[in-house]
Length: 477
Image 1 (cartoon, rainbow, N blue to C red):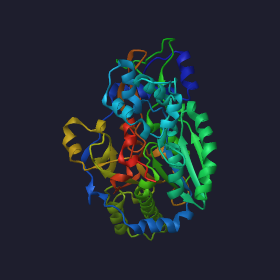
Image 2: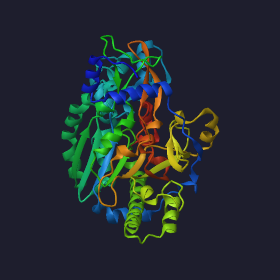
Image 3: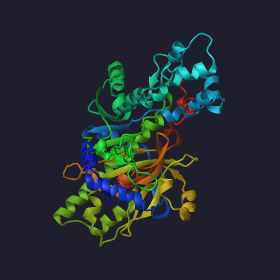
Image 4: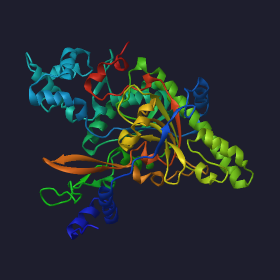
């Protein structure tokens, strides 16, 4: 146990943290997190459903007004990494491929009109890039992706935030209302509000809906302490402890506070223009239709268990064939059924970095379906990773209520051992940082999980600025 000073303890409490939790984090730094016990990759017919047919879309449309829908969009943080190569060009003066592509295609970007107005006469390449990503001009390097102009339309260009409003109206409305929740960094909150005031009335008119938009920030109480390379607490120059945001896994708290019967989750940068959105709309509805059908069966079985009329063999078959966990007649079927449900769209792996679907052996020996990140896989299991055919693009439909209509406490279904430790720096000093179990992997490890293959064209993320020139972001009007 580390000896903290009274001043340290006061700082910990003011941050919304508990001393025992911080001591536990220090212990995790010292011991590290265990690798996932991978059994095998999930494949079609073995943990992954083939693409769903239109009947699931029809079911969703027939029943959508019976549910409170919410579209949950993680949108915190600045787009710094999106402009990494451009920042390198400014600091080094050396041209790189990404910067060259941007300079050669300026007029194709939706932000071109805004950028052109900020440029001096006869601008150099340095002027152009500086005006794009620094305070000299648009300051895109310090803005969140949500507020960047993504797509160029004849009538009016759209930000990523605007495209999520459009998406929401097309697949996440119920009874004429579109509930959308954005997670936002505190420093960007005013800019979000300013943009929403401008565009919400327009899209309400276009789609004949009412938007109910809510926002939250990542809670300071989910931050983790940073440590030196010897695992002692890292201290700032003024002697105070350093706490850092614990990655997107901390957003399970924000999701837990979101009131909905059915919650769509999709990242802020994974949007496409109108002409390319058909597949996304269809398959989002199909994932939701499947989730509705599965939840209805789960609720039916829970009531039968309550009444003592349940067919145990039938329930065992249903769980083994549908809910991503292997059980037998001696298992606690009630405990297995009475959990949050997630239906996850996955795509064929085309070399994207990130997690995928695997069968994993839990501490109790049970096999379950999990999204596992590469960093969670032991070196000796790297061949299993390479055998995986699918990638998880963060495309989820969540059902967070039980059969009595009560909302599950989602913090009770997290695997706390599924975090990881990375090396960072602060003011030139090396440190070790801890990330909580990721929102769609460790933070949902104890959910019932269904993986469904979806088309590649439902995944159009913008990780670097040149992605905006790709086929999934070209507007054809």
